[in-house]
Amino acid sequence: MRHNEQLIDSKVLEALENREIWKALTTSGTSAMGYFIVRRSELENYLNLGRQEIVSSLNRLESAGIICNDGDSTDQPDDPRYYRVPQ
Image (cartoon, rainbow, N blue to C red; front, side, top):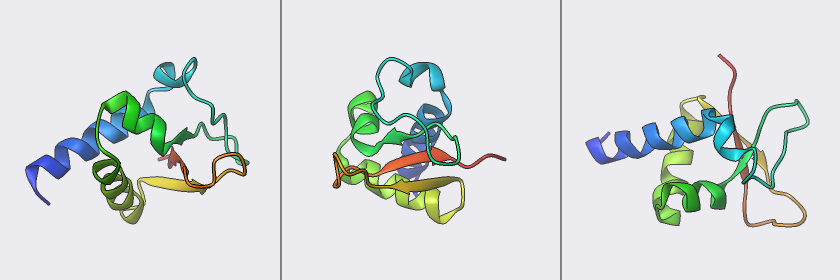
């Protein structure tokens, strides 16, 4: 993995783990399992990164089992939601 990818992954993970960021900003709420979830677009906006950078990072983190895709919502089907897998 390139250094830039590691840096982006680190920022995405840090943002997903920080509930304080999302309390007022998120429209996602919690998953069926009670985990705090964040939309992909919210991560893009908060981190000021492009969609492809965020999508690639989310895919890497999900493949590693670090985060989970909670799926799409009916109100925004093209904007999946993610949460940090409890350790």
